[in-house]
Length: 391
Length: 244
Image (cartoon, rainbow over all chains, first blue to last red; front, side):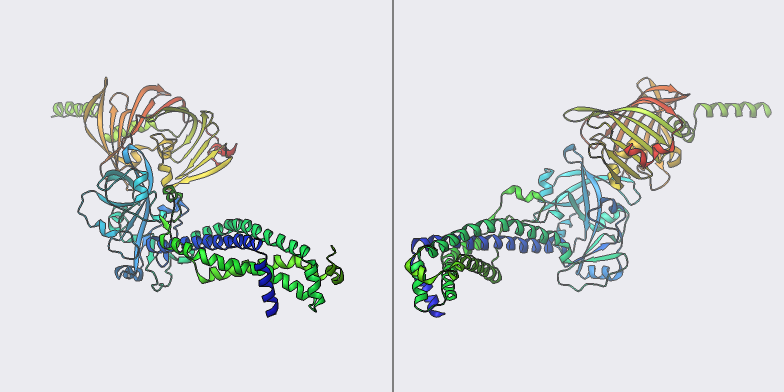
């Protein structure tokens, strides 16, 4: 076996330019597959981390009627916070959010929005509730940068807010933008405003009531109370997982093209080798090698391409990928408006598992592709092969 | 004694006839403006910042809770139908051949960019059922002398907690209406004109709605033909009629 490897390596290196062309193409596949997967992994972990910090926390309790995809549910989706959850809120282990609908009139235009109230002293989410500590006579509100950009609003602006209280009666008042926060999570930014919870409860006539209770990350889950349903972080972040899964599938098309090019090159090289090296094959057999040992030799020769490609990819790829991992990858400004959680810069994440699986995948594929044309050797007549007669 | 009391009583009656109470006025307004049922054609002229659009429709309504409208023009909206039963509204769009349901807050959205919400367009509330009134004074609107009446809601579940009406003293028709939020902020203004007599009642054929919080010149609602207390077959006010 050792002899086969030695012989295969010498033959491969001896093939010169042909081998290096194959190796270079295959090394590109290595780098691009690892880089693309790394970007997706980095995006997923950043998005989930941002969602945990800004939106989902360590899971949420939803008022039983609440359905974020059904605006009809919002008028009924509120009820008194149960005592144990209220105590968790006071201890800082939970944040309570009341959600309702309203209308703002920025610059004389009419715009439907979600009004969300959150307790100002909460530390569960990164929403800067501390900004509410202002003694303004108007309704104090904070908004996200997307909402500010979409409606051309800035800190200190006064706009009219119209809403309906729990009885359906119209009410309106002047609202002051007291702060603008920057987040990568559009679900808590676009088309919504944040008010102090007690202020919103008063406006709506719903004292002590909430729609969503957000648990602190890694805090113990309270047994689900009647009227409140627990939603785990995994469930709340499922949209991100699904999106990345979908992106991975579409990325597989790219891998397929790259791998096809590399494998086609290896397949051609193998076919050509078997055709041109018939005398050599005959000599091996004449010297006592079995046909299957010769098939093995040619297969090892082909699969060694992937080993050389892995080494070459490591030489130029490690510095390149490391540089990208430290500098990150910027996306165009407009990509924020797609409504998906995406940071300004994505830092790729390359795990050992990712690198290992990629190497294994390429090696196995190369070995299979190298073996397929080599099978012809087993059917060769050694005497005629020795003569160099075409078979 | 009798010589004094009888003329005094007569004087009181005649004064009462000249200055009816706010309740009497509201009652008379309801008699003019509301009906058990009505069928009418209308034109909605929406004055936007950039352009003006006209939407024509035919409507059937019964009481305060049930109404059905079908858009007749422009071609893009032709065939669109709206059905309101209680606080739920269904819209049928012929281009998609689908019925969508609108309820809750979405009923307060503007209809086709106008100053009217779905609720404003399809509701016909009796003032006396929801408000108590107080006469604040008199004012001339054009050549008509009007009472200024402040309305305060009698229950907490009324859309507008207070309203202000300018009521024509001779015809018992509001010529101007202001609708206020609970906080007292003015939300909408309506100007009613082209008052004509139909089936023994006075009725305004043109209403200019203005959402005062929004820029623009408002939306004109012009009534064409109208029939009060007309017989409306039950199937018209049902979901089955949306796709017919």
